[in-house]
Image (cartoon, rainbow, N blue to C red; front, side):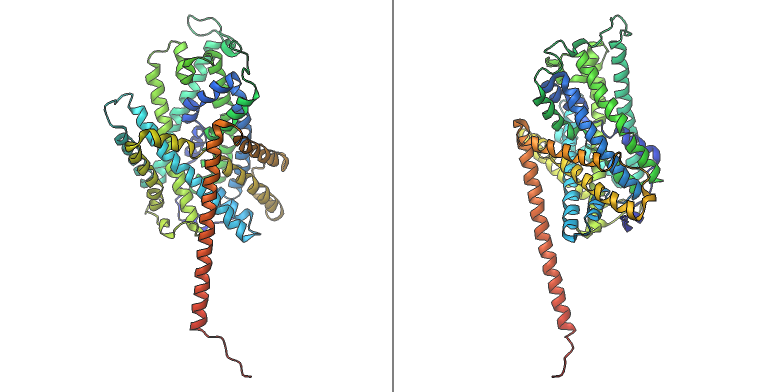
Amino acid sequence: MYDSDSNQSLKSALKPRHVQMMALGGVIGMGLFVGSSVVIQSAGPAAILSFLITGVLIILVMRMLGELATASPVSGSFYAYARHAFQDSPYLSRLAGFMTGWMYWYFWVIVIALEAIVGAKLFAYWLPDTPQWIVSLVLLALLTATNLFSVKSFGEFEFWFSSIKVAAIGLFIFLCSLYMFGLWPNHQAAGFGELLNHGGFMPNGWGPVLSGAVAATGFYFGAEIVTIAAAETKDPEKSVAKATQSVISRVLIFYVCSILLVVCIVPWDSAEIATPYVSALKVLNIPFVADIMNVVILVAVLSCLNSGVYAASRMLFALTQNGDAPRSLTKLSKNGVPIRAILFSTLFGYFSILASYFSPDAVFPFLVESYGTVALFVYIVIAFSQIRLRRHLERVAPERLKVRMWCFPYLSYFAIIGMLSIFAAMAFIPSLQKAFWFGIASAGILFCIFIIRDYVELVKLRHQSTQLDVLIPAKQTKI
């Protein structure tokens, strides 16, 4: 299996409680609290199926990734696995690693910018007269500083952010369940309430359900961060194994269960569904619900921003280990933090914030559209890598397979087929075509950069070889 010396440089300062709470809160973001409304408005109550379909694929991917991460917890996680999985073809190995690492980094630098801008919009609820670009800069600077200080400070911030998110969604499910079963004061049992009252469970057919499954892919992205954190975790095998196994309950409870409650309480075709969780709590007549949910969503945004800085910088650090990124970005602080990788990864965020000041109506939509297909690309590479590395491990080191993929290789291939089907469907769904083609263009640009970089490296090697021949001439033979 793959081993990396870079792990010796990074500090193993993350505690098991950090990793567990990162795993629990990793999928709870703005996509759940706000983005889910888009899926519900399109698919109706059948949005539950959209999140369930995608959730099953994410569960399979996380199981595959958990298998690899417990067998070899290395810096860069699936970037390193992609390089090693195709090592029988050096060119394909370099290409798979380069594309996976930079696509993942690209996703998170977009998220960093996006969450900083969204965070400022949320602060406008309390500070309406403060320029949003200033608030965005402050938020990004604060969480950049947190990551620069130490990995332990990142872990502590993420622990408390995730704790608040998990507590909030757990309380939401508990209160709405009381309402549904008639245990809420001054209310009769609601039963399934609005679930079937507005055109039935699937009012618009299977098309919106499938398109909703595509949209939901991005909402789940972030669960894989625990495997990247494995290289900086104490007792990574146990921590990561436990964290990846908990993904099933997270998907079923946080998404499927909470959205079921939403569509049972709030009519899917009403204007109130634009803010699904706030509207559901308003039905329960909970005071100050808008303020409460604004705080929870803000915490979710800050958590995602904090995780984005961490994930992007660690992936960039891993890229430097194999020459896929400039070696100058490898520098570590005394606390074992890749300071240059962190600062470089946040540059795009600062640039986007300043651009949003000059063109607020153009920058935000561009960021939303620009990372649609990256999650699928990364997950598909993870699945192919797992199949190849699992077979390799079974031959040379079966004892390292402490977490095993279910029904291997059938469920692994099932996950690949499912993700490829979602990717193909994007090309035919009008609302997702822009994201599809932008993703294709992004991958094409990265591929061209790889070709150019490979050519430059080849020229350098030939030049060095020529210089060596001049300095050490070939031995003359007598005729």
